[in-house]
Image (cartoon, rainbow, N blue to C red):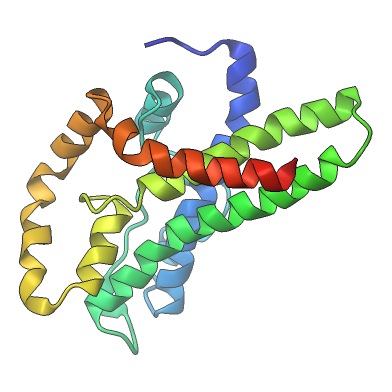
Length: 208
């Protein structure tokens, strides 16, 4: 495990904080829209990253490339106009969808900056925007894995017929272990790498 330099941390920090904060904010926003005031009551309807940071998970992200934010707590019993499983699917989709939206907006901004004359200022702006683009894509894709407690497991549960959902629930107690094995064995790169590289390649082609 290589510890990033202070300069790299300073460059990466804005992108990481924005990606995490907007991801969690999106979960809370959709839950609130569906009638659950739990995120609002707990002060999670904000893009202030300090509210959403789990400091142990954040430190792991910076040092090991694998970590977590503070999950937004949701009570599906409060949902109105939608059943609990579909509501949780909508809340779960919101996080990755927000990350992909931010990645798209970042790509557009980068394209506009690249059209400007290259100066020290534009170089600094691009050096900050690049991690923002990457973190949002990685966070969005990673959270779509159908492994509890990631968003993908709740999205899949919302899509499966009622008699097939139990096997998702049965993975709950093993989810964290599965994720740790995938990450530290390097299998996660083999699984997500091709998709990640394809998306980044398409966005870079658009930007340049």
